Image 1 (cartoon, rainbow, N blue to C red):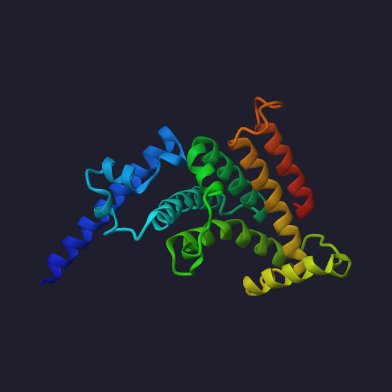
Image 2: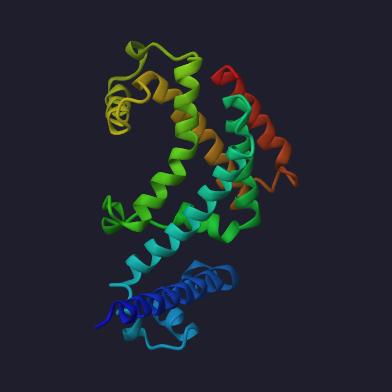
Length: 233
């Protein structure tokens, strides 16, 4: 086999993977997550169900790959918003990334809902899995900015001794998992901000607050104001 033929085969494979992912996304957006089955995706791209297993070992692996696409797309939107304010103080870059996250989620509710609702299987927890790597990239957009803020202007944190023992243990483990870039008490503040922000956005996208709000933008902006106070921005 020549180098050229190998490259051609890989290009064809990547093109087919692109078709598979596009078909899965189309089914998700038009019919919902339950419609994204191996056989349905295979039909969309003109192949048999068994043929699709040449590309993915099973449904879980397919779901993980498509979820990775969405996570990368979301992370890219947040990174672009952050970088558009490259010369601004870190607080402004944090807010820009948060607003970009909401803008992408509101524009792609099916995809964002898929990210939130799709289970993380054992295979997708593997460090070398596409889902894991893409999830890390997404999570690190705000983590990196928060670490920068902590290093340049530390924000108020609780006394770790006053936290429940189980919480201290978990925060200590999380801090170690990010190479100590945030100490446990600072990680507690970061995770609290992230939970409020991401949780509110999930409720908006999943339309859980329509009984009270027809316009969620001011609610989200109020959450950002609370975040600014918490982080001392």
